[in-house]
Image 1 (tube, one colour):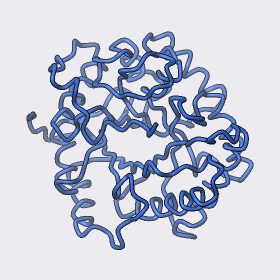
Image 2 (tube, rainbow, N blue to C red; image 1 turned 90 degrees about the vertical axis):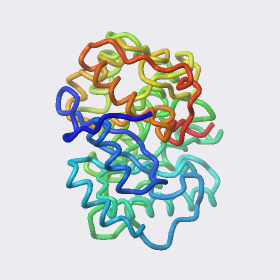
Image 3 (cartoon, rainbow, N blue to C red; image 1 turned 90 degrees about the horizontal axis):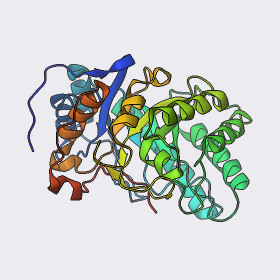
Length: 325
């Protein structure tokens, strides 16, 4: 699929930046150009292989050109998606220690990408219990932040809500509030750690966000329990799964079970004004980034959607970022 080149990235209502998670296999600079060319204004990336503990020893040689192109094309904020392997809520000590080290590494290298946000899945307590999982998560984040560029700038850690499968922590707003309390007990406020709402995960967890009233209820609950300014980013996805199924299956905007009405309310709700929205819909490396950016803008404007080709409904490119199950 191809798309027309646009000279200026666009924003959603309320100053929301609209971006997408794009692969960088074809080059870091090309990823910046791609998101700007399809009409986006923000970018989420992996710094390295998301399914490997091993990280590159040196920064990518293209990194200075990447930063320069971000400024040239007006793309930002940049978010780093941490590797899927990180699990700070689990009881296994070796995995826990490796997760702390890996998150600390991501926080450190993120600065070379001009990234302000490092997004990480809350994780699973693996049967050890919700309370223990939350306690270990808060301690692990504290340790990772302490190890990342001590005394220097560190990006914001952004914890992503879970769909609910596999002993997940962070499934409900109440879970997120308890995590925030545990972090505050360690002196970690909103300037160090905030939250990401993934719409497909919310749907899998049972939140009725296909209707405007359900979105209003959810965000009122977030405001009441977490407080204003607690949401630093949104992962904007439709879902193939049934509501409340605890299954995480991303879908093209408007082609899933959340649908136009709920997504429109999310994209225009005043509680999310100024919060960057990142698409993690399927087939980003197959050209469907252009389709989903265009449809996000059409949904926000209340316009009919561009049709999703039948073959796209089977696409599962590198940015259909479902959490590991």
